[in-house]
Amino acid sequence: MLIPRFLMRHQVSIEPYLGDTSKGPAYGPATPVLCFLDQQTRMVRSPAGEQVTSSSTVYADPGTSAPEGSRVTLPDGQATTVIWTKDRDGGGLPTPDHVEIALE
Image 1 (cartoon, rainbow, N blue to C red):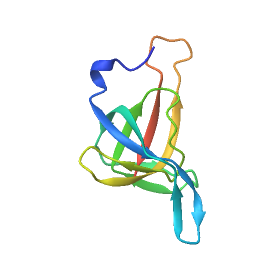
Image 2 (cartoon, one colour):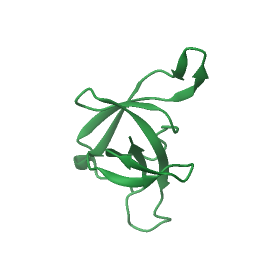
Image 3 (cartoon, rainbow, N blue to C red):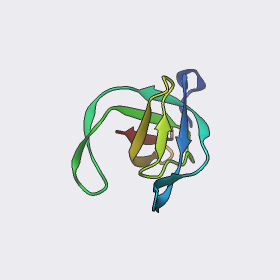
Image 4 (spheres, rainbow, N blue to C red):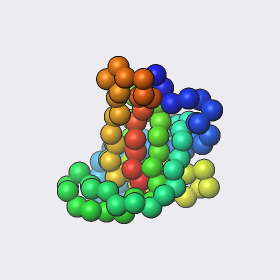
C-alpha cells in the first residue's frame, strides 16, 4: 500500500549527491519527485549520531533515491540538503509504505 495520491500535493526536485570534487560537492541530474512535504522544524539524529535541526520532511513513494548530502529544491525554490533517508515498510500491515527524507 502506498501513500494515497490525494495526499501527494507537492513536488520537489532531488539532485543526488555524487561526492566531493576539488570544486566542491558534485550532484547528479535533478529528478522531480511527487511527495507530501511537511515543513515542520524538529530535532533529528544525523547518521554520525549528532543532533541536528530538520526544517522539513519529505514523504515519497518507495524506491525514491535521495542519498545523504543530496540537494533538494522545495516548491518555493529554496534549496536544502538531505540529512538522512529511511525506508518505511509496513511489513504487510495496512500502512502506507514510503520513503522518509529529513532535510536541513
